[in-house]
Image 1: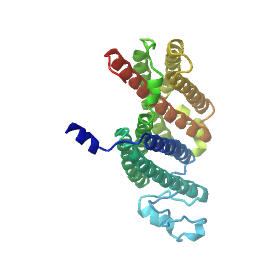
Image 2 (image 1 turned 90 degrees about the horizontal axis):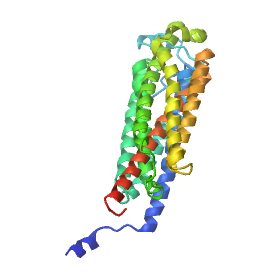
Image 3 (image 1 turned 30 degrees about the vertical axis):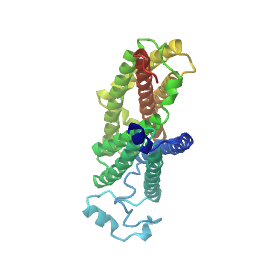
Image 4 (image 1 turned 60 degrees about the vertical axis):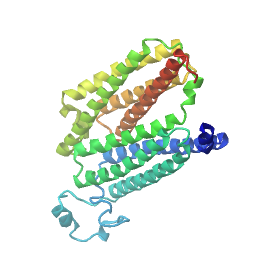
Length: 346
């Protein structure tokens, strides 16, 4: 009877499984890269002051395709938007189209995430978490679209913008989780039997430092928005002088984050070697932290140049993704190591 039940259960064709996983990985990797690109675009929109280039949503100045000149708008358009709560509305073709292209990019990312969810379905017998994560990402990107509308509706209220950014990172995390699950056999091929016993403790110290640093960074970012509204873009070079204490803590704490990541890299290099995936992820993390520090120092010492702000935010976002992959890789390796210790076959 048990043989009959097993015979009726769907069996996975190994060739089909490999093809499905390969296709999913390709689409998921493109989608993850595209989400990071969207984060860069969004940061550019914010740094350039184009966030309200379209004062309404989902249309832009009441049109699905924005105007290219002020002459295409009603003569009293400023009064119309002032009545809606946007007294500072001034048409600027560059800012309007910058924001509009940001929205189009967001729509394209949404379609890519939908495609990722579709491709993930054929991987459900390999790992049920792959389609669950991919569908969750699609649901989250729908919420992200609603948050985007709230950002416009709130006239760029800093708290809403921060939530919008954190949701983007959450989407990255969910997509990375699905992508990692589709590649989990990598850790089976690269065991962590010889890993330094201090690594686990230091990994969580590094993760804690990163969370604290990112939290301080969000506060600095919100304060930057507040100061820019109070002083205006033309006073950008003097914004640093108006920063409160947590800006200086954020700036100084970056050195500790770099040293902690450097120590983590040293532990892995000595115990697992340069070829191990965990070592490579940590090396990439160390480089990204360095980029974040250089871009942050540039902002602090060269008068907050607008073109550097997106690079700094992108580095922080990449840091989150790399450390999330590092944590998942270690957890998977530790799980495999524990199974071996119990005498289980992998």
